[in-house]
Image (cartoon, rainbow over all chains, first blue to last red; front, side, top):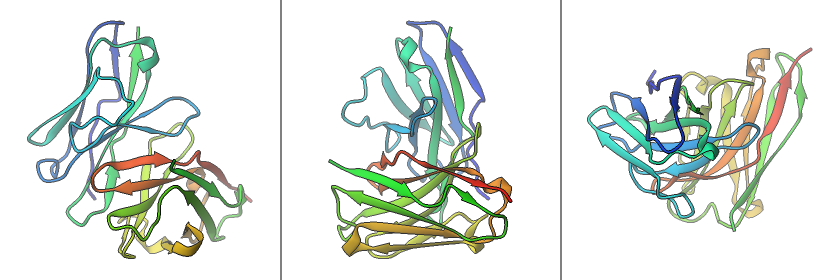
Length: 107
Length: 119
């Protein structure tokens, strides 16, 4: 079955830039979406269609795509950004899949 | 304002069938391009996508769980129902439903409901 691969953890100091990657063979043909999840809460969409930002999401969140890898970038990380982040995309049949998640720690 | 809420049993026994209902407001599942999906998350683990139903009754299932899942909609009641057969303790998880479009992904989520599988 189709898989998306994320690093288990990323650590950055406040004010630095965090980059979280997601790799998958179908990513050149399928859009990627990113979700932020804080403990005890439902996920929140932070990036859609590779690089679009929903209304209400801070400008420090951005997304990019290159080949089989998509990247979520958080510029000027704040303590409130500490959370789990999940990428999501679809396979050729339209079935969706989530990555394994990345825990962002703000040092 | 789009809202979704999951409902169903909090405890099921192994081998039983789980039936979850997603009741939503603020959109219609008869609108072109709109779908409602189900996602689950075992305690302390990652999100796992389960199923999706579109406005035109097109359905998608997780390949690994397809044989156990059925998703249906009742447009008049603004509800989507997910059934999962032959429940096992490994199916213990928080189950979420979400508003889904190709344009914006899973952009609105319910609060989730914890289902425990235990005898």
